[in-house]
Length: 352
Image 1 (spheres, rainbow, N blue to C red):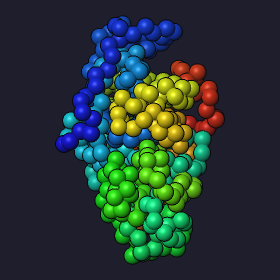
Image 2: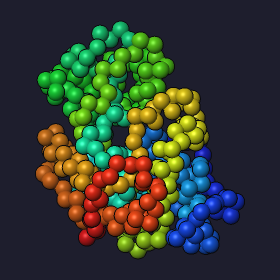
Image 3: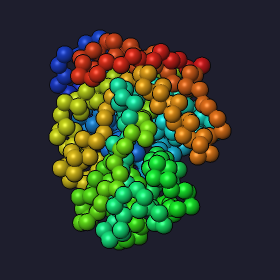
Image 4: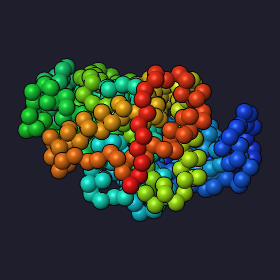
């Protein structure tokens, strides 16, 4: 397995943090030696909470000495979690549903990227066209080659945009391009366009002169990324997953309040990208860790979408694969972390 980060950065020990106002469970964690845990995430802005939780010490504050390993795709993260190479993982909702049908015994217990108060969250996704490609609008993709991470959310987004533009699968050639190489692929004219998530779409727009944003968001679906653990870990180590939830939730609150400082923290993990670019990309990415009625709507929409494109063989149940009990308790215990968010009914789900 190839990590995209040059080295694994260790979480800061609780003993060197100056933490004020720690109450409840957090104070208990601070009294005990921090527990080592390895997190896995994808090398993009959608994983910002994992990066910020480590770099800014939020996991350490809640009793974790966290390492973070970055991967090139959510599929790689899922494999690493299944193999035991990491203890905590992440997965886009659509990938998680296919993982369930493939037999992986994982559970989702928090949202690490999403909007729990909206039906639509696909602004992190965009299609950008190379200069001179002749592509100005989605219909112009006919007969063109689009680079993307095959099998991921960027492909689903492209297919949704094509469907609305009345383009068939035969009208567009899709080829594999590592998301981090998107700008280079456009610059070298290896492809006519790319479909990608933040920050790689914003990088292409800023660093490749003449690049055209063909589509951005559009309300095609509600893009959600979950935090995952093995079912056995969630059952046997509720103390561990509770601390991960606390670290992620406080990281999300801090990120919403401090976008510039958040971009600085993320730049530690994506060092080839400038802070202004990262800050611009973060404006398109919501960080609301709640699992709400809108998450359920997104779940149903996702499996219908996947079934239409023959990625799933029918519905996948949310109950039994998503557990909200610990997350909802953290929300109740720490209302200040969620006070800036629009109210939204929380789901009550539990592991089988």
